Image (cartoon, rainbow, N blue to C red):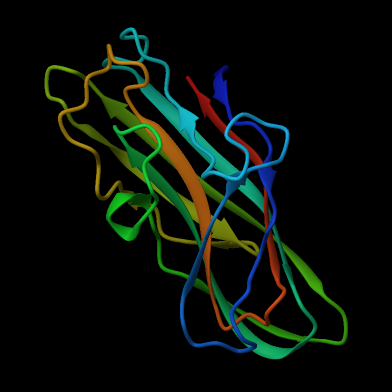
Amino acid sequence: MYVIAQAASAQPITQAAAALSTTSQALVFNAIAGEPGAGAQLGLNAPGSNRLNGQRFLVRACGGLKLNAGTYTATVQPLLYASKTAGFTAAAASAIVSAAAVAISVSSAVAVNYLWTAEAAVQGDSASGGVQGNGGSQVNNSLMAEAVLTNGPTSVDFSAEPPLQFSAGVTLVGAIAGSVASLSEFMIES
């Protein structure tokens, strides 16, 4: 496998919700200051000109999660989003990898750090206009069940530039305000 696209740096995201919130907060990564599109949702473009037409490729995002000190249970759900519209806004309807969240019990006087990964093996072509594949994620050494991709874009034209755009995020529930999610790698391999 070799890297065919890699995203620019992403701004770490701090959870702003109140401590021990029971409301889900989707943290979608934004382009960091100094990068093209700074402050906007970070997008990773698949190459067009039919370079991936009919080919299987891998989309991978990984990073870290710093949960603040305290005694609580947080749920974490890494997500990969896809759309054929460049500059799309990530939403549940565009999540292609959204395995069930993992519960993490925190009981610490200091902040604790965890790793997360979300990955999708994708295949599509212009003749069918669809994409298919499988994906999954991992948090804190807990492997979430791998499943077929959901919400795959339709009417995809792999000759377009870009035919697909991807975005990454992490959904948190119950984490203490100020917890931080970071993205350390976001790439497409073929």
